[in-house]
Image (cartoon, rainbow, N blue to C red; front, top):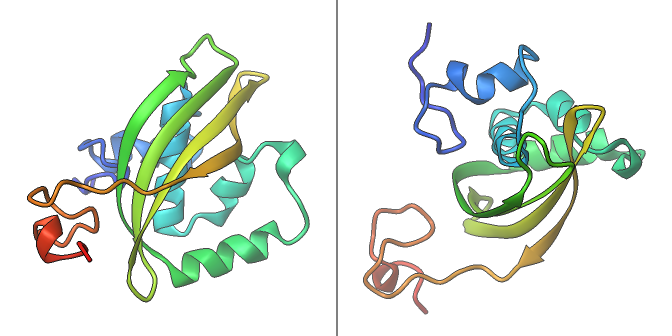
Length: 156
């Protein structure tokens, strides 16, 4: 069995983390676990999982094509969970705020507050509010993951 770390940033082995969800062996018990597994699905190109965990009321014609294009053009570089409200095992709604760093032509940052709903015991992604990206202090590591200080990387 591979000891590969999970892309979601949990520092756990993939097979004991999001791998369980993406392989349909388990369903995420919390909104945060669903959000992390969806990030992993984006990073690994698992369109089927992304569609299956999108709330049925939010699905529309063309989603598969749009997700496939997004995945084929984006490299996901890292995830940081900032805040979680509700979304525990016994809740029916939850919110997870996160930042995800990605590479298109150049590095970018997605800062979102996502809403999740539990229906019939399963968590689903409903929608997300895009928030302004965060800016590190000048001497902190850059958000893009370059390993450089922010002042030497993306501080304009």
